[in-house]
Image (tube, rainbow over all chains, first blue to last red; front, side, top):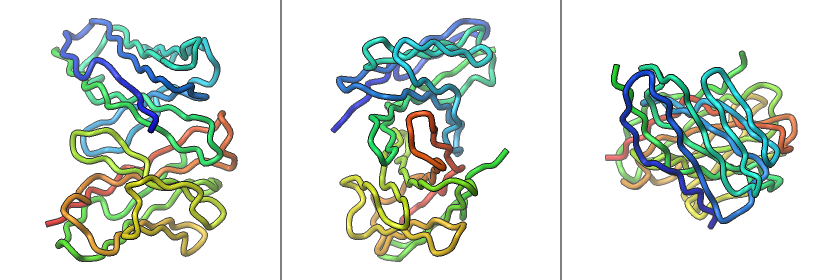
Length: 112
Length: 116
């Protein structure tokens, strides 16, 4: 089946540092989404990307939809302790059911 | 802001028992989903539901699983005879009123199911 390969698996950084994570796939996706999940909670949508090459920001977060539609990255600038959590990329292949395929997640820890 | 709600937040059950997980999607949404997340793993698609029928299901969604929209607001996932490996976090999500590429899924807070 379709797979999203997300990296890195985990990151441990100092507060104030910038962070970058990415997802790649062998399949072409119509939509890329980035979610954040806090422990015991559901995924919360951070950024949605709809067009190849699109670069979108949401506060300190910036994400891009790769030009080949097979990859995406998420950057977090000037990290703060509340950025701690698991970040998931998810892709929509364009099926009429809206099914999302998720990456394995990047666990981010921020040291104050 | 409208949100997806789920009950219960936690459920503990004995192997072989039936469980029903409940979701109230966002009110004008028409497409509904269940996903599962085993502890420490990624979120996995189980089933999508539209117009009172299943539109797609994964290989995980076998005969032990069923979904229903019993009224205008609730969306349920039933596991007929739970197994140990059904222990996971179950998330409900919804989109609407269309499922075009401009629509994004909003997830509920999840139900943590523990099968003993």
